[in-house]
Length: 147
Image (cartoon, rainbow, N blue to C red; front, top):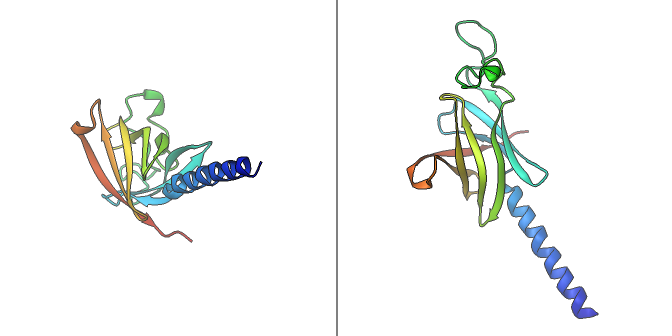
């Protein structure tokens, strides 16, 4: 009986540690170009990121909040960029890596397969690609301290 309890305790501790590691990505991050800030959350065990701040929040031509004008889906062109979910469906794979998700680039209107690698507690390497990871583009995001 003691052995069974020890095994259950070990398994619980391991899964708890894995969940803590997975949530290391949760927070507000700034992409390399500094044009936006993205808040990453754990929603039902997957990780999503939405735009929470824009350096230039309003369209200079209209003075109204920027929308997703580059989206190929006509029904999305009037959706505000602030609040837009640009990272979707990432799953933690262990060792600071989240995969199986997509990243949307509002500047091109394209969605890419993506992998996120945590370099340290305040730095993410985000790689977007089509088909093969080798033929993609990476960006470094930094964590912001938010009160």
